Length: 121
Image (cartoon, rainbow, N blue to C red; front, side, top):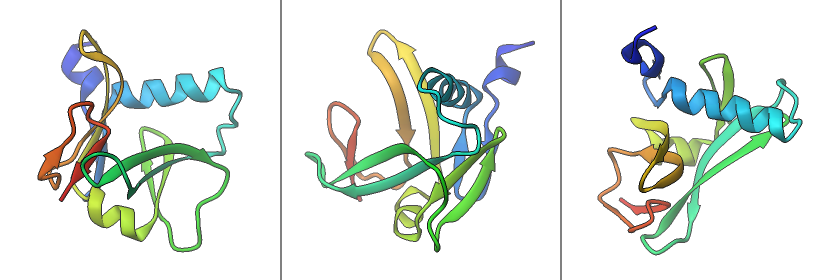
């Protein structure tokens, strides 16, 4: 299988997740004994050095107003406010020399902090 095929993202109008990120989500789910029925929560909240921080967690059920996506056979829950700020974002996973972790490539972020975990719009 080519690298292009492995890293080809699953796309919706709002959010994109790379195969590498999906693989890491499955690994975390397995290591922490989280049932496959739980969804991945993507969101934003106020804080961080640039004004907003990203949220990444597992939830048993979506919230009443959550937008529900299916990316690489992973249910993803996003609340309406977060969806506004995350629209167009690519969720990736990096394990390079600059550190290991999930990376939110957000085209709406007009500024980011040095660590990449907060942003401003």
